[in-house]
Image (cartoon, rainbow, N blue to C red):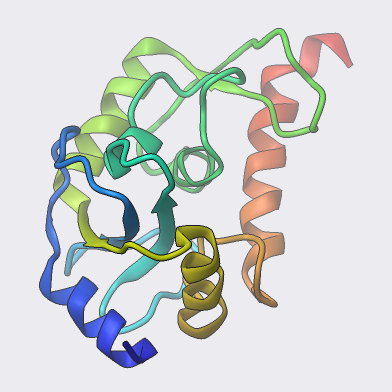
Amino acid sequence: MLIEDVRSALAAARAVWHGQSQRARGVYGVYLVEGFSLPGLMTADDGLIYIGHNVTGASHIDHFVGTLNANRSTSPLRSLGALLQRELALEVALTNLWDDGFSFAFTADSEARLSDWMAKALHVAQLPLACDTAQARSLLVRQLEPPLNLAGWRNPQRNHILSARRACAYSAHADFT
């Protein structure tokens, strides 16, 4: 399958983000719904913002589900929350981890607002693959350059995203630094 074929297959498979999904091994794409944006972020015309992979067949949505805390939060979820902090009035809360300089959480009300936004603003597409999903994901990230993928390509928006995440972390730990 060529990269453009994969891009087309993912775009055609987009569905509403709903917190549950089929369980299949493969790659997935996360897309912004038309009319939604992420502050300060440029996206491709098709709205692709992230490429991920499922090694075990676990739900691709599980990557975004759960509480946004230092122990369970994924990189794309932290990035979404940090970029939307002002727009959604997300309040940061203290965490007990500070290892990577990006550890932060949001209050329960803020997490609920972020989840509501995700349900309205994101579509997810899954493409089952029998091959090495990590290798497939790496190739797709290099070729499709989704902005929330912070590694695997020379992302010109990486510093903007990391700065937003760092601001959330510093705010959460302001009284202890």
